[in-house]
Image (tube, rainbow, N blue to C red; front, side, top):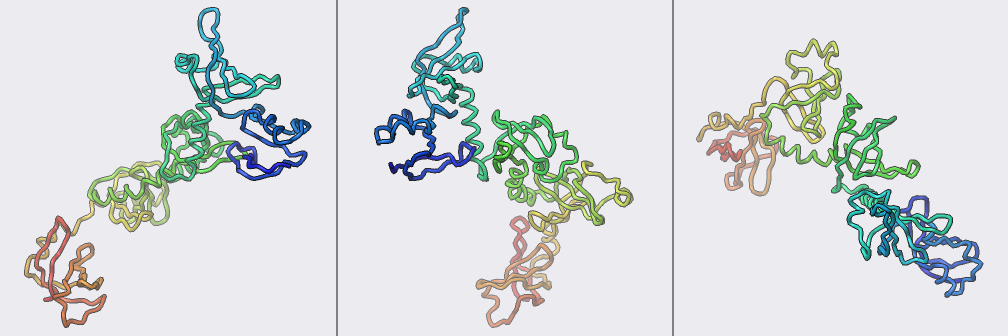
Amino acid sequence: MIEQQITIQKSEDPFDTEVITVKLPKGVKLISTEPYAPEMLEMYGVVSDYEKDIYTHENIAHLTKGEITHLMKNPDGTLREALVDIGSKYTAYINLGKEPQEIIDALKVGLNIDIKVKPKKNGEVSASISEAFEECKRREILEAINNKSLAFTATVKELIHGGYWVEVSGIQTFMPGSLAGMNKLHNFESLVGQQIIVMPITYSKEKETIVVSCREYLQTKIPQAIEDLRGNLKEKITGFVTGTTAFGVFAEFNECLTGLIPKAELVDSKEEFDNRDIKPGDELNFWVKEIINQKKIILTQTGAPIDPWDVAVEKYPPFSEVKGKITKITNYGAFVQLEKGISGLIHKTQLKGVEISKGDIISVRIKGVNAVEKKVSMALA
């Protein structure tokens, strides 16, 4: 019995491994990625009868590095085969007829390369350079699962039952139809052939497929999209209908945002709305009326919203007296709201000996308005 650390493969998933400390009782099968594993075990006293229960790295397909020792040519001078020393009892051979020409052109004796080896029953070991590249890309995608900072450009190749086959760096992945956009697509076939950005979200062992999501990527863009939107509230926007309810129309815009146009904010569309002639996919023009939070944006077709700061200088001239509502009291003063969207601060030095509470309506004297910085200086009247 020998105690040592080994790496085990816990399932059919080649990445589902764990390093454990074990003893080697009779009948246990090992998967080893070390060259000459049987010989090394014999040195530790494992009898040769166990060798039939040992699966070494020569018996499973895996990635490895090797040095090109020979390049064989066809009668016409083109390269036919490459022999690679992989530090094993066998030499791996590469059928260059199955490799891209750009790879063949770069080969030379003595070059160290990454390859994927595939043992054969007759003891030969075949290998592939292009499959090694593909496996490395596959691992890169797998390692990005649940990493919100990594996304990949992908091409939607085919519409299938339940979703799409999507190619990511040459690797075929699956994207459920429900994850193809921020909202349900009104035309599923329109996405075929398009380039999109996706994030890997899980691995399906049952289908041996990486599952990706475009929605996951779009959701990461929402905070910046909201910030950009706040700076351009007067800009007219073009979006498209994603659905209708009894109280309005939902529209998607700016790639990742969704808002509601209440029925009262629709222009010349009341009859169409009542007859449900507004359909998913229809194009609409509108403005943002109010941003309540990232998931609740109110839209309107009645015109660009009026910014109260645009007329604040004329509405609140210096020395004028107006009433306002105390909305917040801090250790440096009290905030007073003159109207929705316009508030100012009364400094604590102006409040000595004055009893006030949040919600009180008080009279204030305007000292000045800075519409650019959106600030109002004021004092108690």
